[in-house]
Amino acid sequence: MRIKICGITTPEDARYAEKAGADAIGVVVFSGEVSRRVVSVERAQEIFDSVGPFTATVAVSHTDSKEDLEQMLALHPDAIQISHPFVFRNDPGIRVIRVIGRGDHLPEDCDAIIVDESHGRGRAFDLSYARNVVQRAKVPVILAGGLNPENVSDAIRQVQPYAVDVATGVEVSPGIKDKEKILAFIAACRRTSHD
Image (cartoon, rainbow, N blue to C red; front, side, top):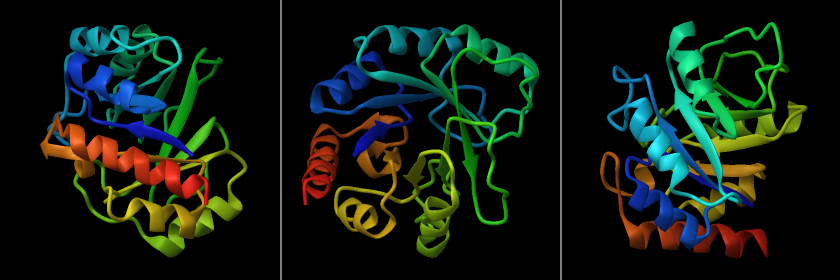
C-alpha cells in the first residue's frame, strides 16, 4: 500500500513524514480559495528539496490557470495532482494525477486517478463510488477524503485502492501535522496491506 501525506507546509513535516514511512508528500499551491494549506512556489520548492530521492513529491492544485500550471511544472515534482481538466498537447514530462468525484467521467489521459471530493476538508469518501472507480479505471486509483488512523484500514479493505492520501486526518490544525497521527496512520496502512 502506497501512502501520501498531503497538505505539507514545512520541510520539517515533510522530513518527518518521510522518516515515518510515507511514500509521497503533497504540497498545495495556487489553491487559496479552496485550501488553507497553500504555500508559495518558493516554499514548495524548499519542501520538495528537503526529502530524499526515494520519496515522491507531488504538487497539488485546484487552479484553472495555465500560468499557475507552468509554475507547478517548473518545480519539477515527481507528479502534479490537478482537478481542472487541463489538456496537455505534449508530454508534460512528469506524472499527472487527475482528481475526480461523483459525476465526473473517468479520465484516461493521466497516470493515476485520485477519488477525492473532500479537497482537504475531511469529508468522507463515497464507498460505492470509490469501489466502482477502482473496478473500472485503467490506471492506479488513489483514495482520499476523510481518512484517518482509525478508519483507513477498513477503507483499504473495502476499496482496494493503489494508494491512500491523507491531510486533515493527521493534523493538529490545517497544515500543521501531528507526528503521532502520522505514525498511527502509516502503521494502520502497513498492517492492512500485510493482512
